[in-house]
Image (tube, rainbow, N blue to C red; front, top):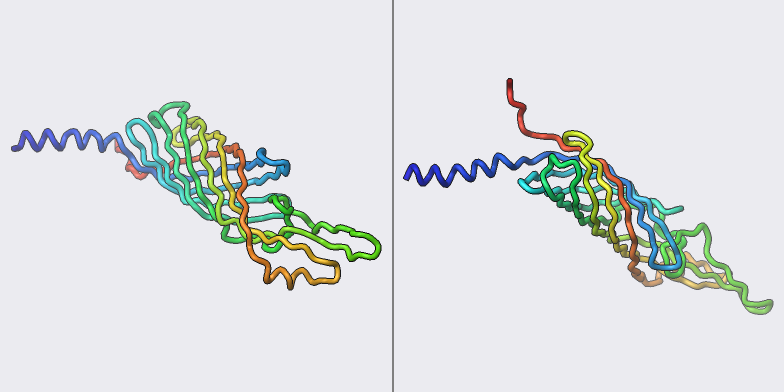
Length: 227
């Protein structure tokens, strides 16, 4: 029984010694580029991520809690969410391929009720004014921003090991954005703010290409061995 127990415990200990969990901090810059429509809108995103690096024998699993600050012309938005990454090969390799998935949602913005294009995420400092003739009242139209409940992406890239526990990450991916808005047309003599209160909220989905540059550092919990 002792021999059998030893044979069962030894492989488990050997496997455990090849694994380590580290606290990881990552800062990244992402550009969401709308290349699938004629609007060409851009979103700049700066993210701070705090999570854990589960180092395995043949790769690393990263789980992050994410805070993001997104901007687009007049728009400013604060986001919270999470991310998952899997980096192939051993952590000691200089270059490793990886893929990642992230999902964030807007928690605060300066642009609630701000002007938008009719079917785009193009922020404007004014609405569209249309003149209909001398004897007919002119009218106005605009989309009005409400919220961004979903921004998710799938990316593939390379992890470059700069030094022990310090890594540079380059990736590109595809992202989906869900935008909630209201659309309204009104005449000059009407108060659009009052009419807007009863206007139903609509949703639009947009697709983006998102190149990303990140820098991460891992903090080890393992005590250093005394010499």
